[in-house]
Image (cartoon, rainbow, N blue to C red):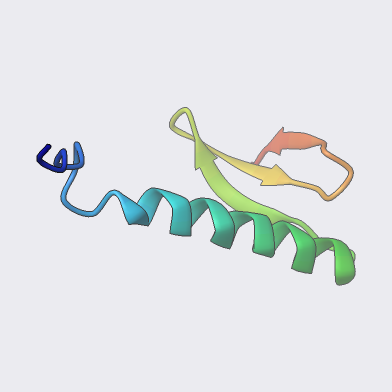
Length: 56
């Protein structure tokens, strides 16, 4: 049986991005800070305690 093609050419990037974000949150916790990223079109600050607030 033939091997199925992945849906996207660079499907591995999704996993890599997720792992990078998780590592950033671990570093933020170790340094008592937060990470910033875009969620639903809005920039947010994500604190290690799980709190997510819009960036002003």
